[in-house]
Amino acid sequence: MTDNGRGTARRLERAILELLERRGPDASICPSDAARAAYEGEGDGWRALMEPARRAARRLVAAGEVEITQGGHPVDPTGVRGPIRIRRAR
Image (tube, rainbow, N blue to C red; front, side, top):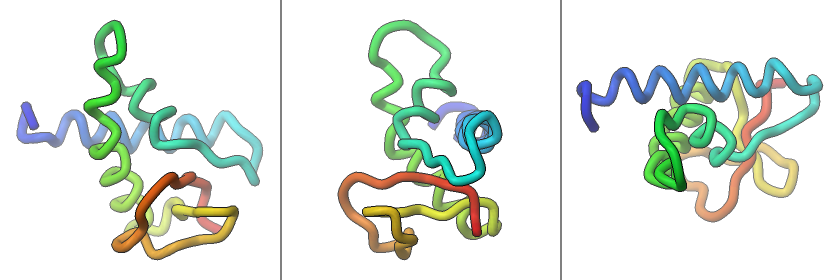
């Protein structure tokens, strides 16, 4: 990543937390929501931020800020595959 990845990583973490703050306490977001919010360009370049968004969510799980879910249930972020959602930690 450019800027050692730290700037992008922080933007993605901030985007996740800000998106969740704007929604109800039980709401969740898709990593694509954070990727789109953090992308600083036009078009579909946000897609390149999908895996970094998932990594940002995993860091926020480790910090106790959020949970990663599948089917509405928290999952282990280290081994999860497929579509995920992100919600506030409960």
